Image 1 (cartoon, one colour):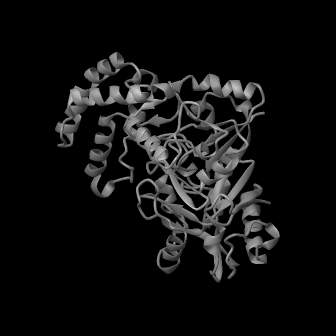
Image 2 (cartoon, rainbow, N blue to C red):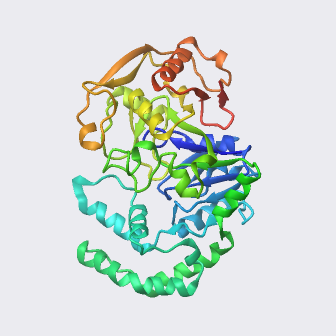
Image 3 (spheres, rainbow, N blue to C red):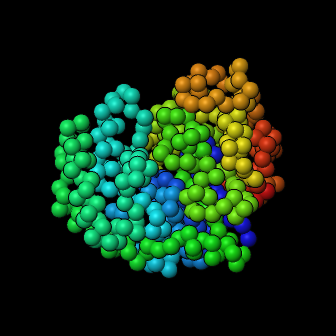
Length: 421
């Protein structure tokens, strides 16, 4: 059976992890296909909160093998820490549960150093990077000076790579940005130790994915960040360093378009964004603070408060086109309870669609449609018929504006607080 892709359809933080966790019980493989530990996927299972950054969100389902694909940039230190944390919570992950593609590239200590130094040097022009080395790692990958996970497992190759590139990186760190140089022996020994610790998990992920697809098994492809953080289609330059749209699952996991038949876009019932960049439907003041407080809108990776605003249907419709969405999972409906009226951005003055790039997006003026809210608490509701009529009307109007069926509705953070329409 062809695979299912789950992507964020806004600016990230839509609740993809929860949707992947829910679907993972039906999948043999859950494949993370892009990004790095700049992602933060929060799962709430039986009251326990688990935050994942690199390990795919299917890991809490015992039946699924989780795969870190070629398109991911992997910080081995962070991954080792994440595995240790899972083990301490009673979830000891072995190679039967996690496979790292030998072709995934590695985030090295100089990537983290340069990312932080560059962002600091930008001052007021900072773009909001997580400073975790994601961008510099992708830069080196594209420039053909990166180190793959397979190579990380070879001490001789690690030694050669560090010796070849650390002198140049240290010159950049010290002479360009005034930072402290990295020690060659320390970096080399730490990377060799990490490579040996992770070696049992590293293998041919592409072959494994095709093995499952060819015998009809279900494969779930998990995206990170959101559509409008895509390096090509987002609000550039306020974007991440990888392709976040559904089509990236093909390149990042090593499959073809024919292997994908279901594309689920995850949308919040309102809109949020972390860091700098345009946000047409942003709401400040009492409403924005209310959404942030009730929705607990703080970054799972950075802890930064998220900017909050009304649902942007124009943006969501464009996202549906970019991703080829076949259905939508709508999350955090419960957060809107108690609001007398709700606004929906249905377009922008003088534009028939969504302008490209940050400069154009910063100039748009949103056009709003107003709908009545509801007072009932939606937490715990898992049946469409139980939702207040005004909540049903809100979902149906969003579905009409976006043009894609809203099949999954979430009314709380827990795994069980989700239902199919």
